[in-house]
Amino acid sequence: MGMPNDVTIREATADDGPACAAIYAHYIEHTTATFEEVAPGADEMATRIANARVRHTWLVVERDGEVVGYAYGGPFKTRAAYRYSCEVSVYLDVAARGGGLGRSLYAALLARLEALGFRMACGGVTLPNDASVALHRAMGFEPVGTYRRIGWKHGEWRDVAWFQKALGGAGPPRD
Figure 1 (cartoon, helix red, strand yellow):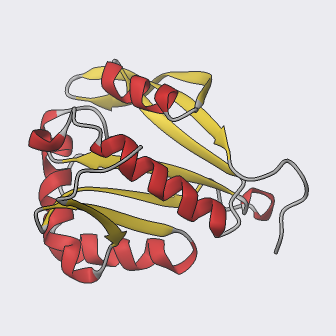
Figure 2 (cartoon, rainbow, N blue to C red):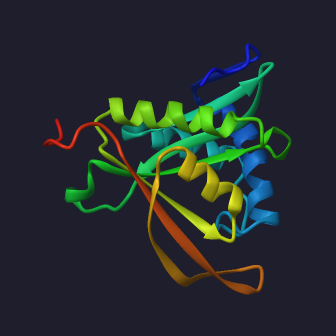
Figure 3 (cartoon, one colour):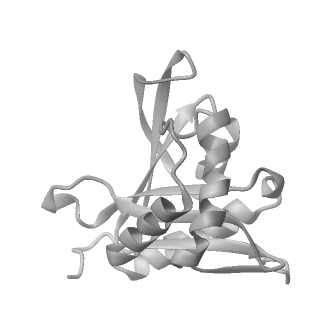
């Protein structure tokens, strides 16, 4: 999948904290895509970026030099046996949705995580969210189950569908 010439995907830095915080705030305040209820500030996002980059990765997508989206990987669970699996998320500025940037960003994220030695990517999608379900399916994620009434947001119980995608080979992981 090619990207337009005016689009760049790169590793995030602390300087991307304000842009990522602004993008994420919309999802916290106006959607159920995340179960966070208070939008983190720029400094907190910079800390999250730094933490993700220790073992996983955090990428941003820029259009004409402006950050319009981000994606990151993080631990799936803390137990040692899960160390080759990760949880992934992608968020785009509302104005940047629907043009293929989510797919490009997710593809770059998954390739980077695979290169880092991860072998399974997992993503949770609060239902209903047809766009996110479609993105996960388009990226080759398989649905593996749904947690029913697992989160309370905006005055209602919410279900979360889980998707996973194998990364790399099926053989033993490399340390």
